Length: 380
Length: 251
Image (cartoon, rainbow over all chains, first blue to last red; front, side, top):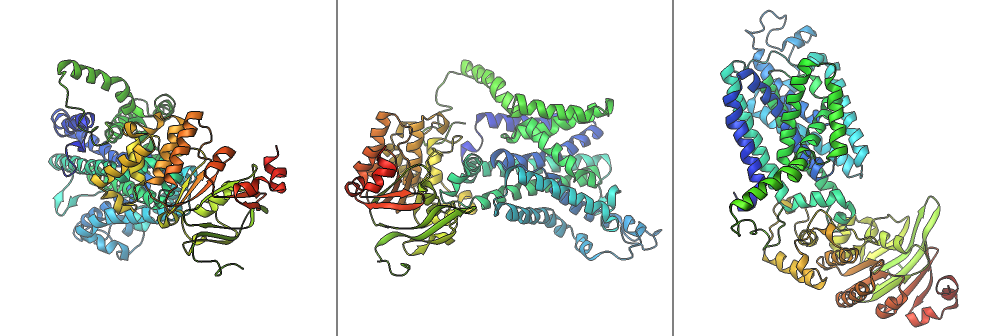
C-alpha cells in the first residue's frame, strides 16, 4: 500500500479479512445462486452505506436522499441495458421497432435525444459516475455555500428524492414510469440472466465494493478525513483555521453520491431491473437505517449493517409482510437510543476487548502495537 | 471620512464600523487603529459589543456599514477562511477544539498548508509539520499530551490548545476573547506567561475582564460602551477617566 503498514490498523485488518472471507469464499460456497443473487442485491446498498459513513458519520452531513443517487446510477445502467434489449429484431412486433417497449406503449415514435448516447457502454460508465456526481455538486454547492445544514439539509434531500420519484413516474414515455425499466437482458451481447452470469456479476460487485472500501479508507486516513471529523464538531473552528467548510462538505456529499450510484448500477445489473421504488423517500431512509444499525463511524460496520438488515428484511417480510416495517422502525429507534454507534460500537465495546485479551495473553511480546505512537498518530 | 487618509503603518484600521441586528446597533460608528506589534485590550461592561467587534473583524458577522482594513486589504468583503489566510487569527470565548481528535491532530489541522480539498488529500505529515507541532506543543505546556484526545483535557488545557492552534498559523493579528476566563489561579499565571511570550512580533487584540491581567499586558486600552468608544489610551489614562469609572470600573 502507498500509505504504509498503517493503512489498516489491527482491528480494521481483522474486519477486512473477515469481510473478504465471507464475501469471496464462504457465501459463494454455501449459498445457492438464488440466495447469492440476493446477497448481491444487499451489497448494492452496502455501497450507499459506505458513502454515508464518509458523509454522515465523518462529515456529519445527514442526507436522507441517497436514493436519488442510487437511482441515477441505476437508471444510467438500466438505460444502456434497455437499449441493448430493444434491438430491432427483439422489438419487431412494436409499431416502432428498435425503441424500448414502454416508449412504444406511450406513442413515442423515435428515441429521445438524451437516450442516444446510452448506446455506448463507455459513455454509460462515465455517466454512472458523473451524472450523480454533478447533481450532488449542484445540490451541495447550492446548499453548503449558503450554510444550509443539519435538519434543513436533510429535509431538502428528502424533497429532492420525492421530486425525482414524481418526475420518473410522471414521464412514463421516457423513463418507464412506475414499472421502471424491466426485461434487461444482455451486456454487450453477454446474457446477464443465467446462473453463471449471476455468479460472475456477484464477484464483479464484491471486487468493486472492496475498491470503494479502499478509496473510503484512503480518504479517512488523509488530513481530509480528520477535517471532516473536526467539521462535524466545531465547524467554526475549521472555518477560522483557514478552510472553506462548504468545499469539504461538497466533496463528502459528492463522494457519497458516487458510491451510491455505483451501488445503483450494480443493482440494475444484478437484479435485472430498475424502478422508482428504489429512488424515493422510503428507500432513502432505509439506507440511512442500514448505516445507523451497522455503525455510521465504521466502514465495515456499515457494510455489515446493509447486509444484515436486508437479510432480516427478506426473511422477516417473507413470514410477516405486515410487521416488517414496524420492525425496521423499532430497530432504528433501538439503535439510536441504546447504541448510537451501532453494531460496530457494540463490537468495539464488548467483543474487541475480549479478543485483545486473548491475544495479549497468548503472545505477551511487546512491540507490535506501539509503532504508531512514536510519530504522533493516534493508536485508534 | 478617514478612509484613504490613515498613515500606512497601521496594521488594522477600523473606521465607521456599524452593525445592526434588527435595528439594534450592537456596534455603532466605531473607529480605531491598531499598529504593528501593538497589544490592544478591549474592555467594557457586558453587552458593550466587544465580542461583536472581533466577530466583525474575523468575518463571522457581516458589517452593516463601515470598513475594516488589514494591511490595506478590505476584510468586510472577504470570506472567513480568506481572512484567516491574510493573517488574522481568532480565539473564541469558550474553548473550541476538536474533541474527537488528538492534540497532535488538532495542531496539525491548523498548520497553514494544504487548506484546499485537494491539498488536504495530498497532505503529508512530514518532518517540518512534526517539528512545528512539537515546538508549539511545548510552548502551550502540552508536549506530553500529543496523543491524548482533546476531550480528555481540562478546561485550561483546552484553552491553551486553542491558543496553540492559532500560534501554528503564525498570524500577524491575534484576537483573543477572554483567554483566562474560567481558569484556575495557577493556570491563569501560566497563561499570562504564555501570552507574554507569544505576543512578541505580532499585534494582539484581547478582550479581558481581569484588570490585573490587562494592566500587565496592554499597550493601549479601548473602553467600549453600548457599541461606541467611551475612552481610549494608556491604562493609566483610562483608569482615571471619570466616564469609565462611572460605567465600568466604579462598581
